[in-house]
Image (cartoon, rainbow, N blue to C red; front, top):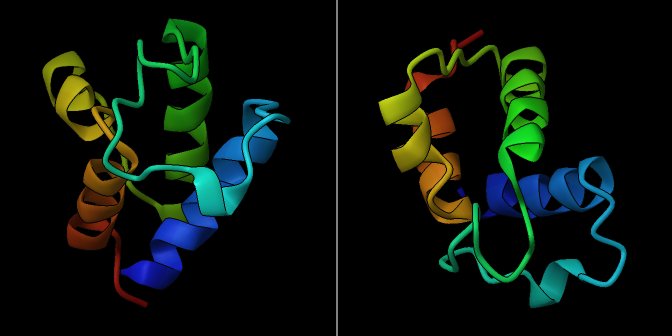
Length: 86
């Protein structure tokens, strides 16, 4: 899962234009949405699309989404447990 965490850090920094954050400084347990990173609902939509496109994992329920996007670690766990095995 460490490889997935590192990959997600890179993707989110790029996707959300978090130019002042470096992957090694991205706290995977910190609050993702509404926290210090300034991630809002529009950013969440972008992340949902990225997760579905890149990992084949659908997040189509707002309550599940709140849990999944609570931290980078929770997002990685959700992807790991729901992605389609090739």
